[in-house]
Structures are given as C-alpha cells and as structure tokens.
Length: 240
Ligand SMILES: Nc1ncnc2c1ncn2[C@@H]1O[C@H](COP(=O)(O)OP(=O)(O)OP(=O)(O)O)[C@@H](O)[C@H]1O
Image (cartoon, helix red, strand yellow):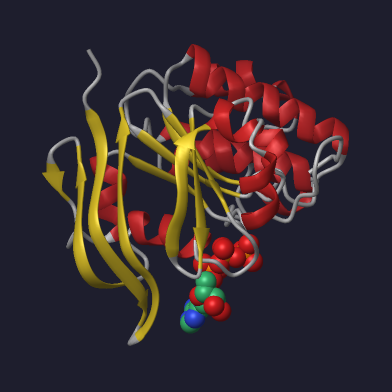
C-alpha cells in the first residue's frame, strides 16, 4: 500500500509580491518519481524551491507525510525529509569531498560507504576540495550530499545540465538506482524530456506558472502532440 508523500493543494507562490505559481495541486505517492517539465521560465525551479521553502508563499498548503510544512523554514523542511539539489549545486568549495558529504548528514540508511559505492569517483576524490572537482563530480557530490540527509523526497533541479554525455549516462544510471532500486521519491527538473521520462513514473508540465499537463511518463513519452505543444521538442527521433 502506498500513501501520499507530498500533497500540494491550491498553491500560489513567487518572489516577494511577484506571483510566479498559481493554482498548483498535485500528489506524489511514496516511492514514485515525478519529472517536472516545461519551457524556460515557466516556473519549474520556483516550484521546487517553494517545496524546499525558499520562496514567498501566497496561498495554498503543502503536506509531507501528513505534516503541514507550508510555514516551515527551509532547514526544518530538510529535517522533515526534503533533500534539495539546486541548479547551482551549492557545494562547499573549501571543504573536501568527504567533509561536504558529512557536513549536513543525518542518520539513516545512506552512509558515506553507500554514497561512495554509488559514486566511486567521489571515493577516489574524497580528499580533494570542492573547487578541484569537475562539473560532473560536483553534481555527483551534490546528489550524494542530499542522500546523506536521508531524505523522503529528493528535489533535483536540472541535474544533467551542462555535463558531458558520458557523465550524463553515469548520473542517469545512479538516479535510476536511487529512484527504482532504493525506492526514494524524487522530483526531477529536466529540459530533455526523453532523457528523464524513461526513469520517472509521472510527468508534470508547467506553463506560465500553472500545470498544463499531468499524467504518466510512459503516456507522455508517446504523446508527440503534448510534447510538441508544451516542450522544446520536435516530433520523433530527436535527442530532446
Ligand atoms: N529571484 C527571483 N525574483 C523574481 N523573479 C524571479 C526570480 N527567479 C525567477 N523569477 C521569475 O520567475 C519565473 C519562473 O522562473 P523559474 O526559474 O522558476 O523557471 P524555470 O521553468 O525553472 O526556468 P529555467 O528552465 O530557465 O530554469 C520567470 O519569469 C523568472 O523571471
């Protein structure tokens, strides 16, 4: 039996008085993963940042495993089980890889050993400083650090962006393991819909701060009309 992990009801949010999101309602069941799609500037980052507690709340409620987290500060939301990997990665550049991983760790099944098993590159670089890492290594570190918080829900903002194809494949394999084998729920923002849809259970498309499509990833993957209408993808056979 699954139970609702995240329930968002009638959410509106933005930055100060500026409204970005409106009328957002969605439920994510435990163990399921959502691909968050949409063209540039449609509110994807704002939605993920709102769940993490980093924007201005205007209306609506957010519940995590039954707890109303709408008014909780970002650090309290992390403690409640939200692991956040921002677009900028925000790793501590003057700390080593190992220190980055242990700095905000919380007890649970994810340990240094398990993160190193998932990302062997990080173990090789465990004594290197954050600013000595490649973009791909930094992204692995950001994901590993979020896992060390032992989250119930992982928020990933364009984790594949700007990475070399071989690193993209490595990270996709790790993400597949995290959401499929480990059963961690995630919301993953991604520009390249066809890369992420095979990994996610459900897909949600935003346009101008509102939901314009919400359904199964498998259905969206074969729905060229919706993809072409709302995403920056052309029909069939493209890499997007
Ligand atoms: N700090 C901010 N202050 C005010 N407005 C902002 C801020 N950050 C983003 N916005 C505005 O909010 C809207 C949604 O931006 P957001 O970054 O959430 O979109 P996105 O879908 O994640 O886009 P991208 O794919 O380019 O990252 C845009 O109009 C943007 O200009």
